[in-house]
Amino acid sequence: MENKVFEALQGSLSPETNTRMRSELNLKQLELDTMFSLAVSNVALTQEVGLPVRQAAVVQLRGYISRHWSIASTKYEPGPIPSQEIKSQVREKMFALLSSCDGKLRAAAAAVVAEMARYDWPDEWPQLFLQLVELLRTGTRDQTHSAMYVFSEWVNADMSDQHMEQIGTLLPELKRIFISSDNYSVSTRALAVRVFSDCIEIISTIAAAENDFVNTHAPPILKEWFEPIVAVFQQPICNEGANSNISLKTECIKAIVRAAQGIPKHVTPYYGTILETLWMQLRDIQEPFQHAFVYENSAHSESATNLLVSCEDDGEACSIDGYLLGIFEWLSKAAETRSVRKFFVTKSGEANKIVPTAFFCQLISSLMCYAQITTEMLDDWADDMDLFVADEDEEGYRFNVRVSVQELLQTLDMTFPAALALALASAAQERTAIAKQWRLEGNSNWWLVSEAILWTIGINSESIVQQQENNKDDIPVIELGSLFETDVWPLAQSAQFPFGQGRAFIFASGFAKMLPPGIATAFVDACAKAVADVHLHPAVRLSAVRAIGNFSRHLSAETVKPQQGTFITGLASIIPHLTEDSAHIALDALHATLRVDQNITASLEPVISEIAI
Image 1 (cartoon, helix red, strand yellow):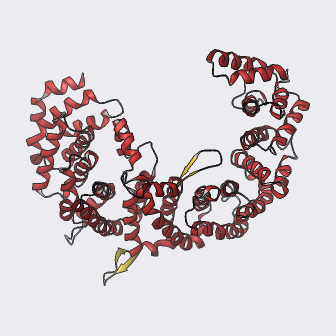
Image 2 (cartoon, one colour; image 1 turned 135 degrees about the vertical axis):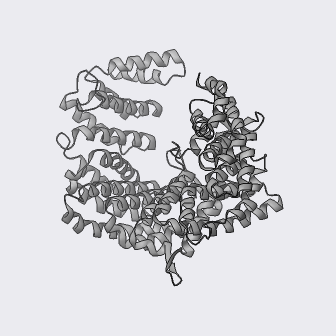
Image 3 (spheres, rainbow, N blue to C red; image 1 turned 180 degrees about the vertical axis):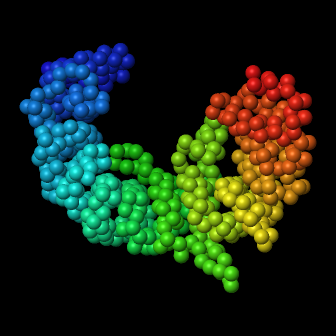
């Protein structure tokens, strides 16, 4: 049996397609033999066999376990299930592989052990948990990493509030490994934090039913963990081989986000310290982030990329993005917490008007930096305009730093609407000065700065417009006039930067209700020209399409009527060329435009009927 399995595994690695397909079919047939799992385990443990075959054996076994190990599996396929005697031998062999000298083999074996634990622990493999804990306590660095990998797969998927005793045993070992930077690799320590995060998730599930238990045990657990977690946040970003701490920081931020979500009242005492620490980290990362991911022609691009993108033990690249996403998510949670309100807003003057703090204004300025379009986004949009449309949609399906900034801004708007508007205005002044200076110096990156300013403010346009409508003092919430002069008009006139030019259209339309008549008319005319011009960059035309919908809904009919016919015919010309993923924005704009003036709409019925057909 072992020879047959070995030959089939070897054939499955063949570069020759027919050989590979025959071998894979052969393995499927061999899986129906009750001795298969033992045979493939023996191949995996045979030192004389090449590593690729041994690794393939473990991967094959993992698939077999999901299909034939237990009827409890959601992927179970009809067939004989191995006897308990065979299962016991396979479990023993896979556990032994956790001590292999090959990292890929250890990782594959750890995944198999976690898969078996799903069905066999505690009834058929009661000793597994303590065996793994013993590896954490006394094993080598590699054995500890393997055991930690098992827990990272196992705790999250299969442990629950029924296993609090095991979690109580595990947490001290996780903490010991996490803080032992001299004894364990960064990747092992990051896994320890990940498993701690899973434990917090389990504890949070019982918070409602077992409130006294959580109130007793959560505070000391968080006290023990949050101090070293904050210490990790305080460390500068390091990306020097095995000492790279990006993955560790990422797991730490995920852990405190989970704690803030699951047991928020117990996290409250730490909000201030964490906020101050993460703010310093955001400011430190801001400059290299721009050089690494935004400014393509930056002289510091290579060194910044080397700092913020690391290579993990498994060969996968680990970028700073995950850490930033976690920070922005945590800031969203913090902003909704009463205890940190003082960091964001204060009272000013005799009327005790709520105004943003200096920190709040600086935070918004920083968010405008992180919101800039990255070179990767520009490349993606150049290859696929549907992605550009999707990323511009409020419910876009790609999650990145820019989208995370958007979600944070929306939370801040719900929590501190008036203060946010003032903070946006303050931050815009600071960032606009940079854009203007770069534009005068001939630095082509100026448009990225201006686009991010308009994008950031535009996200909150609905709230700002509503505040202006409710403003009894008739004082502008945001000085649109200066923004148009410094950012909107320069972008609108820069055809060489189509995504910036398109942003000018979208921004202006978002504030349609607040536009002076002259500016409104100018942009309505520009949109009419853009949507009809087949030679324009698609990004500009699609942005004009979005703007047409906003202008048609929010400007007076008298302002839009002169261009309504051009809007309709322009949209009619562009809709047939859009894919299903992009056509909705043009149809939405058309629906709004048709309602401006019924007489003009009726006169263009043949054009409209053609679209419907």
